[in-house]
Image (cartoon, rainbow, N blue to C red; front, side):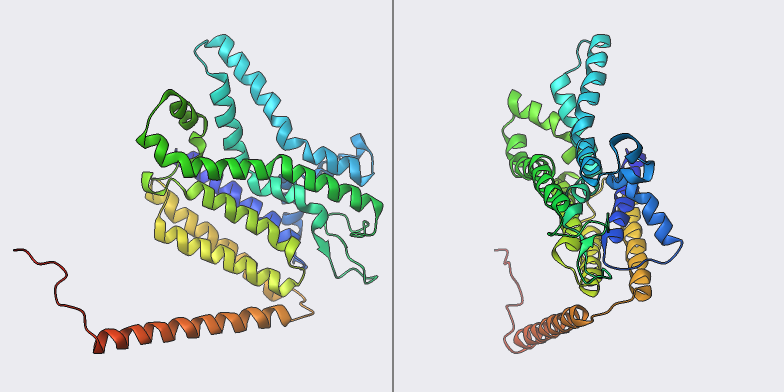
Length: 325
């Protein structure tokens, strides 16, 4: 279990590099080549010359990317049917749900990045217009190909990652009740959704949903924010905040996984910091806003702590909270 969990963590970290590639910044070598190669994990089929099969037109290539995640379901079903033929006691429905969920859970960042790629635009285009980072030849919101890809992207989000995320959150909410009131239906649901909780300690059963929401927010940053400085700042805060939460909760079942999760996020932050220092940032407005808000928040926290300390000093609480009679 530890080896599988560590491999899943490593793959998640590698997918985070795909988010870094979507940021409006120019990476240095050899990171640029590494990130370009890692784009295959976000289903960017240009790396494997898919144009030789579907043509050079961007819309068929993008549409092919959207069929990769759903296309694994029939393949898994065929494998499970063969397993049931060999071992008749196999529950195909439960194992199909659990296996597909495990795969989607691991590559969730890649699925979201693939769906949202038409909405990640580079405002530093030489002509002054914005173009897709994945395909600079397509102008955002002006080219007919981009409009088609945007419609396909919205449809893909509504059909794959959003339903999966909603199902995971709803299951997490019902999980304590299923344990408290066991039934054949709840037992089947627990087995089908085992991928959502089996890697975590019983008290941190909800951490899988938190990771999915973090992955979604991470993939949304290049879409919502166009300023490169603000993108770097928000990404840094999201990864740093999740690292603090992870080290506080210690959700994984063994100490090694908890430690490696923190180490992986430290390396991601270090890589992002190096990329930010080497980036050519034209506007510092986003950085100024984040810096001002961060200092203001720090000041508010410091004043709140000081006020509480003074209150406890001059209005002391009783010496004992409990009395034994």
